[in-house]
Image (cartoon, rainbow, N blue to C red; front, side, top):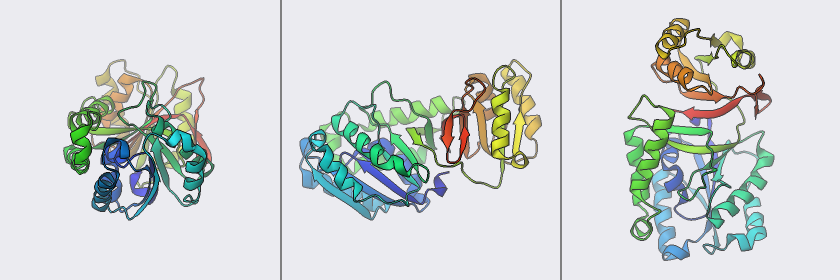
Length: 325
């Protein structure tokens, strides 16, 4: 899915937010040749010399190949007082050609982060039918932060994130919140949540405001449904995804091992690129174990009243989580 995001807009409140919040995802986007446009709303003067912080941020952008950077120059901590001016400045930068927009979450303690989220979502949502809009996790997010998308990486990708963070030496020296240890813990935590049987997987978490379309690929989709309440939604997903490219598996076994064996038999000889599993821990784990070679995309769909719940472009799917490996 990341490979299909060619033109990206990122709006951050401070000159170091994206390296801390989505540094691994940035590295993956850069590796795929994405053209990233960055808006930095404040000069970061509260936690250090503004000119020095901007130089650190510019170095990180050069490493990532980010060539278009808009420094709006608002003072750190004062964005809420300049909401209209911020919205006007950001609006002049937007166009309709973005494949994805990344910004802060509304579920954040920091007033600058919340203000950027409000402005960004207000301006970006009219583009939602053509764009994917995601909110990244900062260390100041509230417990209400509820991610639906996870971007995975290995140890090398995690280390590359740390190298990006290390370019902001003034912040590592001054702020406990800008912590390599905290970043490692977050990557490991989400990796363990998404892939509990793997200890070499790291992940960054995002809320999904808009998901414009499903990723395209040459392989098969695998939709796994439960016998109890997810069967109807699973069949609906098969119809939306296309029966010629989609395999449906509805295991009858109660135990995980039996489920794995049934799913393995169902998909034998097929290349699975996207996996759709219900919000059902044992069945999800069984499906991931059965596929073995982890699919490029994992979608966790809801089973509410037999109906799908989240709109994606012109179709509606009950997708609650997206995992991009």
